[in-house]
Image (cartoon, rainbow, N blue to C red; front, top):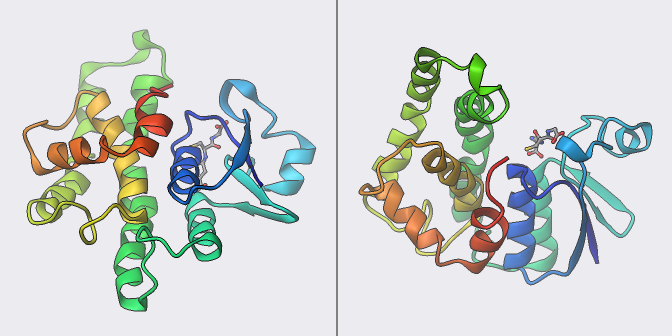
Length: 206
Ligand SMILES: N[C@@H](CCC(=O)N[C@@H](CS)C(=O)NCC(=O)O)C(=O)O
């Protein structure tokens, strides 16, 4: 059975939980990170030198980096349409996973931290507007992509949608976006997925 270390409110933990649930895997999970701490303790750092969550055990194998963990789970416990076996189709999915790490998360995190970490008295409307503007470019890319297809790659949810869908959910929850858009319609489609509801929507933001 998998053992997942990480708080449920972490987008990167949610990614692994959604993937594991998609594959029908059993797992245990322990609260680590955020208000629960433990992630800067020496025993945790010995497992994951980044001091970040998630850290995932599969037997003796200890893993970190949520995208790598998700790939591993699909490789080991697939096949699953979430991670197509054909190298070309897989590359198309993986580009969105890399894009989420390199473009989406850096664009969204400052706005998220401003609204969810900084005390309200320290926020200014100008700063919020500036940070929000930085999020427009990646969502314009998603909008163009999703105008012509139901999911980021192909006709089913893939790992491409999992990582980016979690951030899109947050973006709307932060008062951005237009429900009457291709991204909004994609989020409605994702909401039909029980694992997305369980591990993302029902958990809320922290
Ligand atoms: N690239 C890493 C990033 C991991 C990461 O940044 N985790 C955040 C939560 S989303 C974290 O551990 N923050 C410190 C904390 O929760 O205390 C991954 O994908 O796993």
